[in-house]
Amino acid sequence: MFITPKQQLYSKYALAAALIFIWPTMQVHADEIALKPVKITMDRNTLQKGLAVYTDICMGCHSMRYVSYRDLMEYPELHISRTKADALRGENALTAPLKSPLSEEDAKVSYGIVPPDMSVLAKARVGGGAYIYSIITGFAHDPSGRIPDGNYNLYFPGHRIAMNDPLGWLDHDPGDEKALLEQARDVASFLTFISDPHQIERHNIGKYVMGFMVIITILLWLLNREVWRDVKHGLPDAQFQGRERRDSDIDNDQRE
Image 1 (spheres, rainbow, N blue to C red):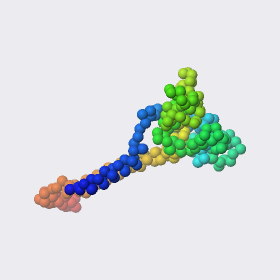
Image 2 (cartoon, rainbow, N blue to C red):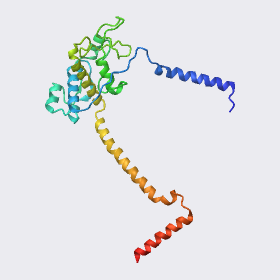
Image 3 (cartoon, one colour):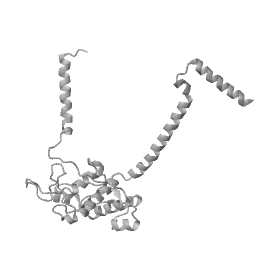
Image 4 (cartoon, rainbow, N blue to C red):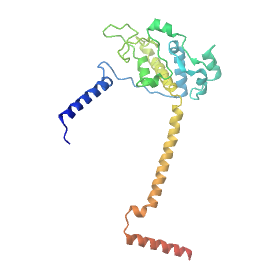
């Protein structure tokens, strides 16, 4: 097909316009590094420990406005009793969301920004639980010395983060590293779970559905092979008629 010079020019303009829109999403900063690998687990012990880390440390600044104390009781994976829920909520209503005591106005004064809600944080960040785990254990000293200690993070975009070091990772004692990593993994697992609390049930149902589909596929394949066995193999007319006669003879012998 012949393409005129004008069509070629329009194609170039269209390509340039497309690049303008998609280029920001294609850029990779030279100082970005891969997230830390972490095994996110959903067992009851890990989730309960992660909840404890959230309520004891993270909840000082971060709320969960889409999760109530009653929700914690209703999720069987957490197995939170009414007594435990009452201890967590204090004077708050059972249906109240998990809200930080830090008001938005005080947060802006202290940090210059309102801390993000953690209800769906794992879903809202690329990397999910690995992102949270990396941020918590990513505090370091700025090599250039421009960012104060406690606000430099290897994994945060731009490296300057308003959140202070929650676990005391910066300059931690080597003997405490294992415990700190476990705390980070626990709270990352909890936040991954709470962002989609029905994922475990959905995955379990999916296993049965896939098994059912496999069985149905096999049965239908066998049925198709049986119904179309003569046509599928392309038997000649004479051979097909001979098979019909043999089947007829067998039927007659059975009747006799």
